[in-house]
Length: 164
Length: 334
Length: 118
Image (cartoon, rainbow over all chains, first blue to last red; front, top):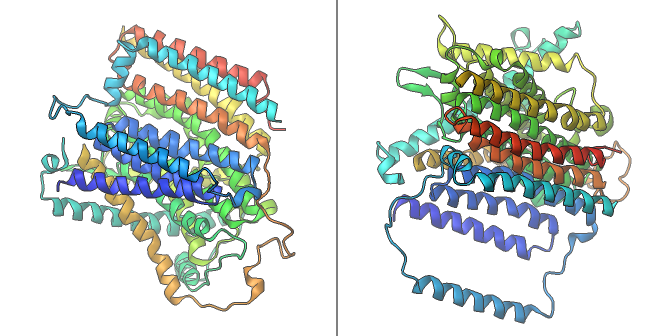
């Protein structure tokens, strides 16, 4: 087994275990905190794929910012009252069967696809290459992103003001 | 590109190098930043307030923090009955680890074999911003896990303060990255062979320093642990060695911020005559002295003033500075 | 490149162990004397009233919401900054438009009082 394979299975285990804690913990704060190792595991996967810059974003935005936002939301809404969430209800069997069906479909899809093995080199995800594409082919996307962000900021403020 | 091809040395040699580097950085930060830093803080505080500071343990009180550490080692580990034990215990590891991860990209000096750095990452500056943002999560965990009103208020205040000051800090980082044309810390130091960026970019330097003081929750931005209102803030409930680990995280983060300021704005290890590492240490301690000086000079902000200052002063100024700098770079290059 | 991150991974793993080591030491040597008052929540010496886990001010949430948006915007400037010196004036105007829209958001948040702490 190569080093990459060991790293991949280790990271996958971290993501799966913390993901299970996120969905199954009766304590909503535990769920929120368990997101952090899951995000960091995904960071590792990005690095294995050669996308260092995306990995940096993953830590800065998801592990650093989104987790804090989620924790603030919990403190805003639930406080001490939401600590004993019921994690099961009568729809459990339906949910389980849907999950199994999706898993079967995914596994079938993955195993039946002919993957283009060794098809060229990985595209460069260095900050420099991304910056070049912002100035060239993806210039409109870059500017469009700022519009999307502006809209989301305005939307967030309007919703938050309503809550007050 | 793969792990196996890239390694020039056998994998176990690389592994031992990595482990040795980690142990070196951890013990270095624990001794230089946490133990000596605390002593320095107390000595300088004493000097600024016309008193003596620690004096009794060892010559001139030099061994005071060692005695304190031994004392903390003997203390009992108390977990309050109402606390959330899992989160309470894991926050202790998150804070110092997030602070120490910053040191991976700090070039301490240069030798015949290349720069003295744990790893020169391609995205160095972004990595630094990312790891230091993880401290917030640890602080929120400590504040919430304690189930103590002081701790929770301290943790929440700290989180909103640290995230607010991450934006102006990011703007200062981007300004420097733009001038150097790279995110790698070694390349940024190399780019300062002529002029320090503190000379070219005094405004970005100032913004970075202010944001750094706010990120490490020191006076005048210390309402997180305002002793007179919040006891010790988010670590009020921690005892003994766990308290010491938070101190390690806090001082580790402070030294990391100062070291990053040296790297980005004061030419890193560069300087005449003296060996590079010594230059780095001199600049580092000069900045640490400024941090301590500020502590005894300014009163504490209120939370509304503090957030106003970040959002209504530092961020607009940082944005403007970025645009003006970009404009000049363009004009000079044409 | 992967080797760099291998080093970082080792740093994180070994660092966690090193940070946990003093905790192991105190678990072995620290004294234990239990009495119920010791495990009370600290509230300046008075018995604590209620829990700390209560609803908190919406302000904190509002600030972190604005922060997340700005953090994402800042991220987009990193790749731009790296190539700026090599690129032509198009990079400058590109950034100017991007930042103008970003500033519009800041002004909006300012005017709507999202940046006020009441």
